[in-house]
Amino acid sequence: MARNQYYKDYSDFLSEHFSGKVQKITVNAGFTCPNRDGSLGTGGCTYCNNLSFSPATGRRGRSVRDQIKDGKRFFGRKYPDMRYLAYFQSYTNTYGEIDRILSLYDEAISTEDVVGLIIGTRPDCMPDRLLSELARINRSKPVIIEYGAESSHDSTLALINRCHGWSATVDAVNRTNDAGLPVGLHLILGLPGETEEMMLETVDRCSALPVGCIKFHQLQIIRGTRLAQDFDNGIIDIRLFDIEEYISLCAKIVRRLRPDIAIERFVSQSPDELLMAPRWGLKNYEFTHRLFKRLEETGIRRPSPTDSAR
Image (cartoon, rainbow, N blue to C red; front, side, top):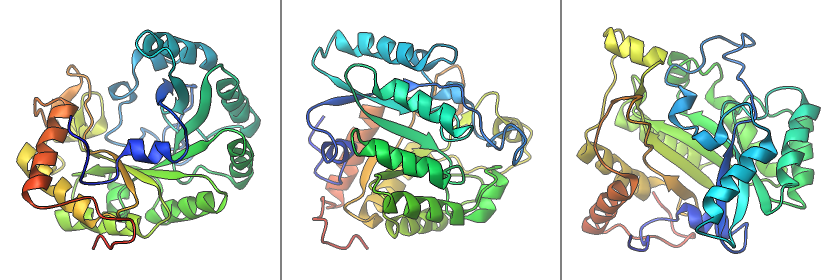
């Protein structure tokens, strides 16, 4: 893969917080979500089936330490000097009784060769007390918070059963940044009812926030989700990008996004047996190669952080 000359990537972001090579190990700590357990709603987000992104190393039921050790054995065979980040990914990893949550984080960071935490959560699930404790941990081992924003449009968030609005994301990002913690966002491109203009407006709104990285991916129709049922039954209108349309959108995002924000990825690959659509038949590296080619053709280059991306 050619060097990324076109935008700040995730390896650049990680190098700002860690020295040497680090690898994420996914941890499933047995959390749920407030839009699943009835606190705010039931059924979860309409597009979500956690099996689509949780690998076998992060299966629920094993201790946090054992899951990390499993991951270390897997990666350590090829990279014996690698250090690790415990990535609390599945469901909402700041939702629940705070002392229990902290004990799980402590279990992770006390495991040998773990040099930091990445915590995935919802923007409406970051209480001040927990944020203060995370800031304390961050003083000894870096803690990165990733919020699932998905969209900046409240109409979209209601349609996909997020049970929070964009204002919750703005509040959480600002409070987390004020606490001294690096912040990332997750966004989904192609959510029901969203036009390209709406997606780019979300990019603009994210650029106005103190975030360090963003993870984009295309909407995928996953078996076992409410979205898949609605799609099959013709209840909901979903725009499914073909590969060239999606690459064109991604190129516009690169040009538009604030240049000091790192882009972790543009695509996600769900297991073949779960994925209904879109089925592009491309590996992630193949997509990246085609995106780089488009950026080269359109003359997009990585600007300096002082330049305007507008």
